[in-house]
Length: 172
Image (tube, rainbow, N blue to C red; front, top):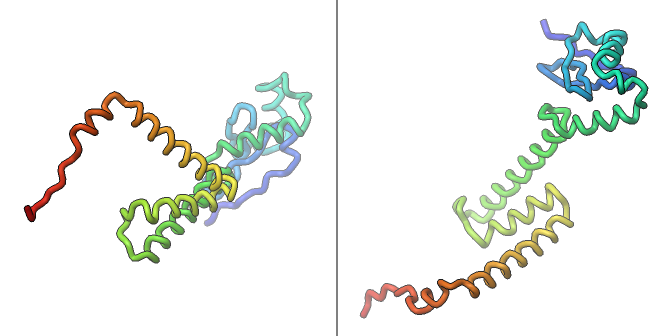
């Protein structure tokens, strides 16, 4: 026998409650203390009693206050109703896009510079949009210039210049 999936009424938001999905069921969750109540406690009088007993200073708060708390809680959730799940699915799409690009090039998975940079740019474009791609390009250029300047100022640079790596010349 399949469990019945209940729908939490909108009036619960004025008492500071939202829902969380667990095993295909919706359970009520307080947006203040994050306590999850059982299905038996999903009656308006019990939810109102929780607000009055556990959070008496918040009884007179508006529904907008509780909805902002609910949004904050939603960003923290790890279940399908949270923004984390949405982000993970975008990352998965980006990962498949990268694998497709590598397969199109018929290259091994450790291809290096010629494919990794375009793949990362494609992934950021999918996940974050065009603006993030431009920011990433500027970060890459900035980091590269910082590394070059640090290498030039390094006290070990003269030692590297004096002892250049020898090439193997097998034909001499």
